[in-house]
Image (cartoon, rainbow, N blue to C red; front, side, top):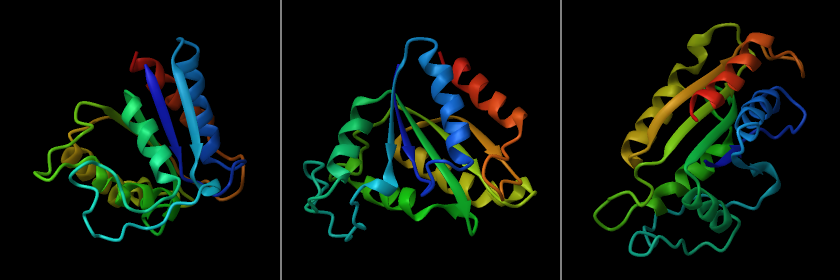
Length: 180
């Protein structure tokens, strides 16, 4: 299974990477091809709402989104990994989601229908309710794109770096293995 991890945290050594790495390891151990894209390192401009992309799926903005679009198109599984800030995914990931309008045609049929998606989220709060608005947004986005929501891993209490609980890391590993 070909997988792309859209890594939305600005920190490559924080908590979200612990979960993403465990998930990636679970897939790689079974021979899957996994590519992690560190969105914070890329130049991705916000969607301009012009809909120029609809006829051919090509955005008029010449930035790194063209590569992300290619990796998403080539993958069977898309992983959205993000810390949750203010009840929402990071801005690094949100801009990619907004630019996903290019996956529709002029009749709003999805060009990536049938793919699977997983979310990996961390937050500082101890309440898992903090993830509810993001999970709702992801669920609606995946429904619209015709993507099946294959699972989610959430870790609360992630204020300091490296504090993801072992049970959350294990859940990420098991979720990855369950998809094969």
